[in-house]
Amino acid sequence: MRAARGAARAGGRVWRKRLAEAETWLVRGVILGGESAPLRSAPADRARVDVRWAVLMGMRHPAAVDWTDPVRGAAEQTPPSTALAHAETAYRAALRAAAELAVHGTAADLLAASPHGPGNGYAPCAATAIPRLRDELATLELALEESEHEEAVRRRWAATRGGG
Image 1 (cartoon, rainbow, N blue to C red):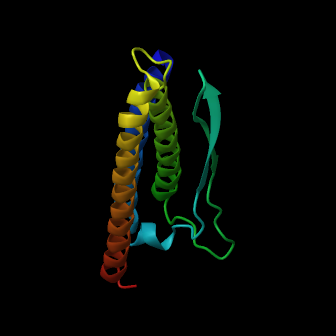
Image 2: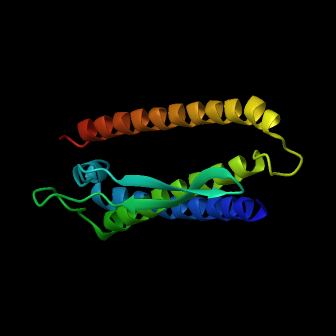
């Protein structure tokens, strides 16, 4: 369990670092190519994240992330500047790090709530951890949905501001 918590903390540091790098490259790309440049060059395909599960101490938990990058179609526009190409790569790394952080954090929480965890029995696990994790999942799903909506609004705004 200590290793899982350590992996979650390390994952959080990696994710924050990757996100900061991505945002830096995005700002540079927007300065060079204009506000609508990221929208014009975004691939239509989406990344795919699959979670592999494992069992430790009788507790099923997420163990690893399998990541598939989105594929840009032959007819799709490539980023107009190297800054945006770097931003795209950096955002992919940040998303991959976020997925790994989610896996490690969830594994640590589940292992801490396991009947074999320190001072835990099955009843406390079932009575408190599962509803709490469901609530946290609902909160994260809502935050993700809001983030996607905000991104869509920014893209529409950028498209209208860019003249296209």
